[in-house]
Every structure is written in structure tokens, then in C-alpha cells.
Length: 584
Image (tube, rainbow, N blue to C red):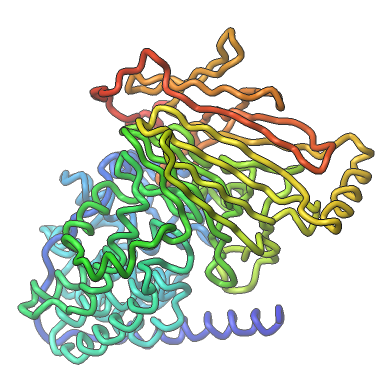
């Protein structure tokens, strides 16, 4: 299988290079109907780029006075720069220096790589590049910008390349993006009406496969669902701008996914950060949900499932809790997935409190792999062994697939007089240690108290034998058990005299963590990997630990708002500005 996969990856690469060389010969006969300027990106990230601060995988580069195309040439993670995602952030500044830098880098890319050379000629990178070249064309052409004939030819070459190679894009999101880019090019380029028709038909079909009948995506990545829906909304907007009718099938797919997207948002508006996803670009979910409109009763009945995309949501007062309550994705859909089964996140108002390390995708392969492990999430870890393991990296895939994960995940929820209670269980350690992990979470009706219990237990005689073997391998010292609660970097934590741990938020809120008598409580260092930042942010984690010496091990804990924290609190403190990183 490995040799065949390697051969297919090499053949795919050769096909990309040949298609790129041929596509570069494409010309344009007539004026291009450039779309309205693209509104996207983060000005804070744009300011860092303008200062010359660019991260390439594990390395923080100084691009001041240099071309971005000279940064880490040959490094695999430098290829991501060819998708030109930095254009969104740089041009979000709206300043003349940012515009000039963007024009210089784009013009240089066309001169160096527009002939079909370089690592950027893959369908994934070409799709993002085409969307941005078209979406920012009016700014890029602003005198004395990139020459219009030059830019038009580059756009036409990208469209021709994608028309040949979009089916080779890895993953549902990448194929949807490639087809959305092709649709936009077909609407803008002269004489390409047929391209728009075929791209739209393929986009309708691909989007229908990407977002299933329950409004979920196979990767279980909330941010991927958001980005797919955003691409469909933009595709319909492009049709309307070109004087055509919005496609009802695309609108129906957005309507199908919107209830799931709503259910996966925390109280602060950000998405649950699971399976390689981050909180989502600022304001993007609001734009998608506004475009989706209010769902009909029929749509709600078809998508209002108890566990949207395998997650369970508890919400009361100003508090939301998201629980990963399903097995991780399988096969090719798991290349960015995490071993996070039964992990949870908690947000209070505008402030994340309990989180995970994050996706880690912007900080290099080492951090990305570490972020996928169970100890990087707010859940129980046994012997530092993840509940699902990473398999070997296959040629042509962006990451390792998850293997040997939980075979069964059970969920039971009930509404009680004193709050909503959910009980979840997973068997990811049953084969290796004979143990099943069960977790109970109960949120009070006012959202001020979260009670938790984590249980490891054997279920059968065979489980008991496996546990005895694992215990004997430990010289009967017991199996190390740790329930971790990773705190957001903006949260300050300190031990109290009574043994509890106080968590203070920038909003002025205080939360108190208390443990039962079964384990040892500690406050340890942690790391937070936030997409787009220059560096991992130092944070803290609460660790409730013990050693499993018997077939059943139980750890109880509570997380409660301090009595001095008012019910209604005006949170006027700004979030940490990313520009502060440049001064570290």
C-alpha cells in the first residue's frame, strides 16, 4: 500500500507540473470584469507582515526589505505562502505601504512562477491564489500597480490549471474552494461563460457531498464547515453580481449547514476549536448565518440533531460548554483530526476559560503533531497514551491519519431541576489497558457551576485481565491518570489557601476550581497555539492526577464562578492585541 501510495503521489505531482506549464500559455482576449474588492483578513496580522514578521512553519522569519518568495525556499511549509492568504491580512490595513508591498510581492510571484514553476502549482494553493488575485484585483491594479494584462493572464492561467486539476484537490473543502474559484473566473474572464456553467454544476454536486443531510462535514472540523458555507455564500453573491440568479441548491446547502454552525458557536461568537479547527475568522460566521437567513421548520426538523456534528453543547446564562462526544473521523478525513474524544471547552461571556492547545497548524509539524495528542486537550489522559494514535504519514497527505481510536462512544443527556447533565463514555484505552473512560458534566441552570466526574473502569472479565497485565507492567506502581484543564492565556490562575485554584479573567470574572478527595491538584505550565500568531503563547493548565491501582478509578471536580462575580457583567476590556507580540 505504501509503495502504491507513493507512486500515486509522484504521478499527481508530475501531472500538476505538466498542467501548470501548459496553463501558463493561456491568453486573454478582452477586458476582465473584475469583481468587487474582497473583504477579509485581519489588520493586526497585516501590521505584523508590514513590519516584516512572517512565520513559516516552525521558523519566525524577518521579511523586512526582502521578498516573501526568498523566505525558506525549498521548505515544505513555505509553499503555503503561494496560496497568498497573507494578501487578505495585508490589504485589510487599507494603507498605501500595505498596498505597495502586496503589489510588489504579487508582481514578483507572477515574474518568478507565473510560467508554471515553483511549489505553488497544486489545486489547493492555486484555488486560494485565484480567489485572492481576483478579489483584490482592483487594489493590485491601483497605479502604479501590477499591469492589468499581466494580472489577467495570470488569472486565466490559474483558471485553466484548476479546470484540469481540481479533482485532485485533497479534501472536501479544497475541492469546494477550487470550484468556487473556477466559477468566479468563469464569470469574470471574457468568453468563459461555459466554464461558469460547468463549474457551477460541479460545485453544486461537490457541496452536496461535503455537507451531509445533518449539516455536518466528515472531518468534524467546525472551522471547515464554516469555510465551506462561506465559499458557497460568496459563490451565490458572485452570480448575483454578474447579473445571474443565485443558485437554489447552493442556498439549500448553506441553510442545511447553518443550524449546525449556530450550535457550534461559543458565547463569544467563536467556534469550538476541535479536530484542526480554530475559532474562525472574525465576523465570518455572522456573515454566513445572515446570508443563510432564518431556517424553515422543515430544515430545522431535518438538522436539529442532539449532537451537531458529534459535539454536545451545554449552555446556560453566560456560559457555554462544548464536548467532543463522538469518535474521531476515519481514514483520509482524519489527517488533521485530534485524539480529543470527551474533551470539553468552556467559555464565559466573551472570554474563553477552558480550552485545548489549539490546532497547531501554523507552527510546524512538531507542534501540529503534539496538538493532536490527548494530553493537549481538556480531558483525561492515561499513561500519556492518546485515546487514538497517529499512523504512518502517507505520501501526498497533509498529515498522519488517526488509527486505533475509540470503537464506541456513548452519550446520554437529561434535563434535571438543577441543570443539564450529559454522560459520555469512550473505549479508546480498552484494547491496550482494559479501561473505559466515562465522563459526567452537569451545568447549573444559571451557568455558574459546572460539576464533573471522570471515571476509568473495566467492564468485562477480559478487560480485567488486560488491566492486570498493564498493572503488572508498571511493577504494580499504578497507571498514571491525569485530568487536564488547559486555560486560555488571558486567564490568570493561582492557588488559594483552601486548596482551590482561582481563575481570573480580563472581564473581572473569577472562577474557582475545586477537586474531590480522590486526586492531587496541581497548576502547571501549558501552551496555547492560536492560528496567525507569531509565537505559541504561554498559558497554565490545572492537572488533577492520581494512579490507577484498582479496576475503578474516580476523580470528581467542580468549576464555579466566585460569589463576588455578578450575574450581569459589562466586559469592556479589550482582547490582547497581536501587535504586542512584536515587542516581546
